[in-house]
Length: 280
Image 1: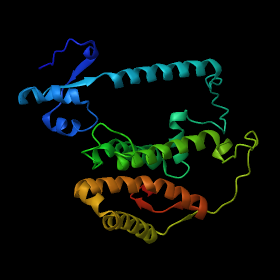
Image 2: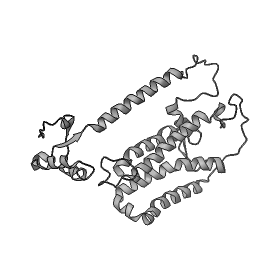
Image 3: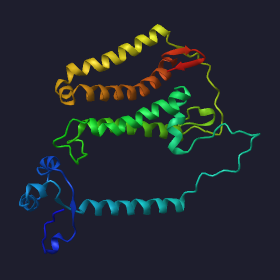
Image 4: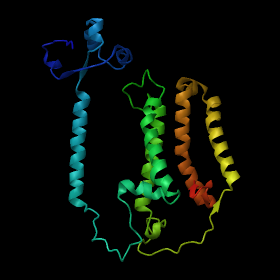
């Protein structure tokens, strides 16, 4: 691999990064210091295909941020005890047990969805969707190597929505749930078990459930193509359908929670296939 030799102390902390010509075409116009452009352009086309110079500034910042975060965690651990309890007693099961904080979001979903949906299907779709968002983002010219809202509004907005929704579920499950998974406001006493309200939950009829999903996905897929024509055209057919499908499935979570609390809807669609009941 070709290297640019310079004896100045200014360039001692430089590293060589492999980059294709196509990547360089995008990268060279994005905040690259002029002298580095000139140094790169003096190489032969073959050398340009493999070599570009890059400073270690970002590596240093990330290293310092990691040290500060580690120090913060260590200080926090000195003042906060781990929430450990006595050994489990099979004859006495507490009614206020909670999962570890990183699983509380799943535990919160169990209140609104069947276990197979809350524990497997929805988390898998959310994780896969959030991982695919940066690759679906159509902003390929100014979005390479950038993660600000101005440069990548689609990726940042969708990822932020999914990320915020997951942490909102964790916060609700950790601080607003008491015994028997009842909802408690912060000023209410969680040591006193609330009376379980007798609410008759309702299900959509099968025809109504199918109609709901057909209309929901139909409108959700078709309408944006007329409102955001340029966006859909930039994405392309395949990426658009992947993007909109993942977003609509993600949006179903707050919609289902809204229907549960406001209209006492237990399931939108419930089907019995052979000996298995599939409910959403």
